[in-house]
Each structure stands twice: as structure tokens, then as C-alpha cells.
Image (cartoon, rainbow, N blue to C red; front, side):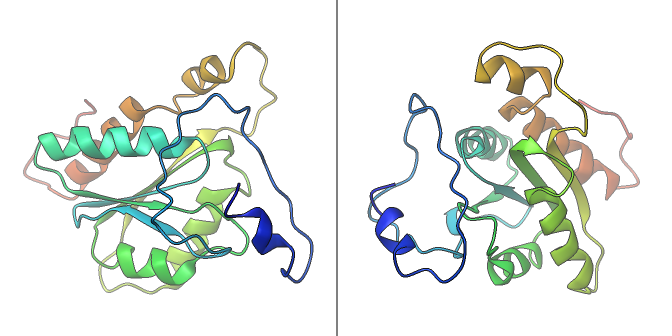
Length: 181
């Protein structure tokens, strides 16, 4: 927020800012440039692309680390601003990866995942991408509790990212059994 708020003063147009509750660990680095509309590359890899926003960055980094231990190199792109969304960064990283997964702590309908799906759909890659969104389905959440309990209920977790990346990678390998881990 220290780096973001001064940039809002000169921003043209309306701004919607969603703030965390303040208890999440800070996983970004002050040495990494921050600019409205420019995603931050957090990890590099060509086996999968994980696009994340907000508090789900922590889960994405945990998943990328666990996947790396299994030999799967996942790129993690932190889209700290969803509108404007950094389409150039998404396309350039998706071009290298056969699998794209988005994760957000918001509704899937009209959220980060939908925007990334549109970008990928219009990029006209030579090879199709295997794509999945992780987030809150288009329902009214009926159980309340902590932020973590809601995220767990809707599988907004590092374990779900890992499982999803592995499943989508298997879909691209017809000789392997098509099972979900």
C-alpha cells in the first residue's frame, strides 16, 4: 500500500481498492517495481503459468515451490491490479506454458480468471492452452467463518493449485492415465 497509494493520485479514472484484513504475511518485495496495471513476475517457469491476485499470491508461491520439487517449473504472475490487467505479461508467459491456472479470492464470474480466459482466447496461440480458474463459484456463500475457512471451503489453496496443474499437464499427455491426484 505504501507503494500503491501515491500512484493513485495521478491515475486517470475511478479506482476500486480491495484491502486485506492486515494479518496476511507480506510476500512481495520492496525491491520489485510496482506500477498500476503492470503484473509482477514472482517465479519463472515454462511448464505452467499461475496467475494470481491479492492474498492468493502466498498460495501460488507455495504451490510453485512444491511443484518445483517434483520437477514442474511454474511461472507465477502476480496481477495486483485486475483493471487495468497486464495482458502483455500474461500473453508472453502463457506463450511458453501449455497450462494456465488462475487463482483468486473472489467470484469466478467476471473476475481475474474470466479476464485471463478472454486474453488467452484472443491471443490465438498455435498450440491450445489447458486452462482452469480457481475461486469462489457463482453462489452465495452459505457458511461463514474466517477468511481461511472460506478459502478452504472453496478449495482456494496451494493444494488445489498443485492438483490442478498436475491434472492439466496429464491432459496433454495421452499416454499417461487420466486421473486426478
